[in-house]
Image 1: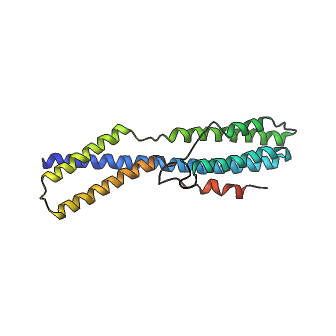
Image 2: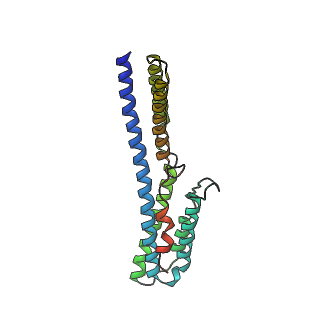
Image 3: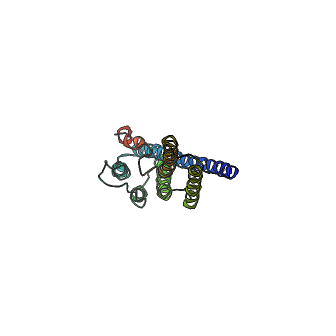
Length: 210
């Protein structure tokens, strides 16, 4: 029984480590994607500013889109749950950019670059929307919880009944539960308690040009 319990404990530790690594990687990827979105928006705004005054409406739409995205993704505490609709925003901006009529080579180059950035932003939004569902395989997690339950059952069978043992098992169970909770939180970084930072997008309007 001790050999079987040791084997099960080793397998549980390996799976738990793999799930934590996978969830952390998902968290970092989505954080980096949001950072790239803020950089692309800055590049788009600067390009439109150099294009000419006819891009005023497109730039205003871009600013409204930033404010709307921040409000939906990071609503005020208790106001509502995060909402993310990738079908709004970039498409309207893309239509505005398509309507521009470049007059010279410089404007044509900026126009092509702006359309490409708008396309990239739309693709990133759809990617973020798809990633919100999480990448954690639920059967994997259910199996892990089952293994942990068997481990604690075996610990209880072979341990004397006293306050020290009960307290130790309780603390261990609390630690393992915390690890599983962190896995679930990191796997969905736009929801829950552990969210990616909103600072890159919140501070963006102040860094955009006039």
